[in-house]
Image 1 (cartoon, rainbow, N blue to C red):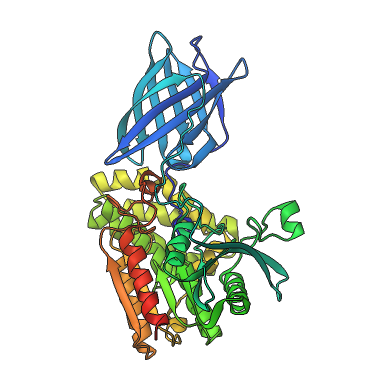
Image 2: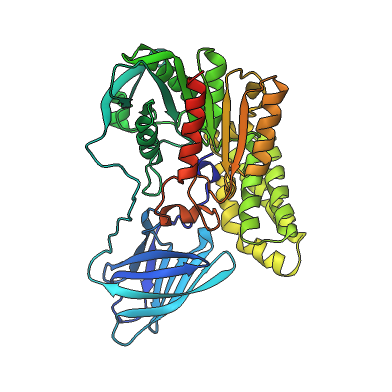
Length: 480
């Protein structure tokens, strides 16, 4: 899955209101770096007043979280409090006499960190360096293309890059992960599909990358007018990828017998579906593609993240039980209000089974369980959780490369690579290479821990070993 499936965000905040019981002026922009382990996240609060009450919004510059409202903002005796209960986060600090600095503590999920905010006249703006992004002129041809998923009457638009020369060239269709993605698979200020397309095209491969339906150029007039609408299903995305594959086969200078697919994260669910539906797919590459069901993956994700944060086995088992019980409840309780009520009963029951510090940490994680319960009300989430890739994987007959980073917390390598290898082998496919890339996260960046919050902080978009391993393997397949 992609970041979207895990639904792990540092903060996502609610409606703001406040009471100001003090004359000190704290309106304006407040900036400060929050150090959490090896991470440093730059936070910005914008505090405003209507003359009677205070309100605030929050930005995390390094995580792409912008203009999110704080639930409650209060100032009393020169102590500023910013409360974000939905996500177990709060800040309380003392305003200095000059009114230019606030020193205090950030609390979230049972942890406390020192945080000093300094006043700024302007909102801090920062764009991080992305050294792998290519610069023009390119040593290959680039074309903006459009085609259609005719059955759905869905226009699709993308960028086709081709080596210069007569060809015909082998080609790769890139398939994005979950959520509405643009053709570059833009995430955390990174554009991994742009870097990947550039790298492969320089190696002699044509590459097509496409905006998801409802995004960028892949929008109907109604989608332009009203927005992207409901999120596409796995079937919708597979249909669109199939249309992209069909389009590539018609392109001048491309060898229709040497076209493969590369799917990242949830795209690793989709690429095998397309390969089974069209036997002309020459090969597939699964970048951080899951080998287990959506339900199993969700449990692995939360356990892996807790494990990276050095949670004990009691907490790992606790969170697994909550997920399993809520998934079972989701299948039997169709009324949303009743589901929410019973879901909290499950959480409270499981919390009561813990003792001491584990119990405190569980209670402090109430906001995270709130997010999980909210997600389980979504038809999109429910459909992903219900999906089991194994029957499709057993039907894949073309060559397969499956890569997962050793520090991937969204698609953990050990369990998913084993499941992928088992499924392909059970189907009789012997032309497979399943490989863990040590030290890399879900985006194939070289990462300290692999946690989602690191993605925007790492200058590297894709580690060279992932690019080179992929390019070499494709070259071997298309040379046959």
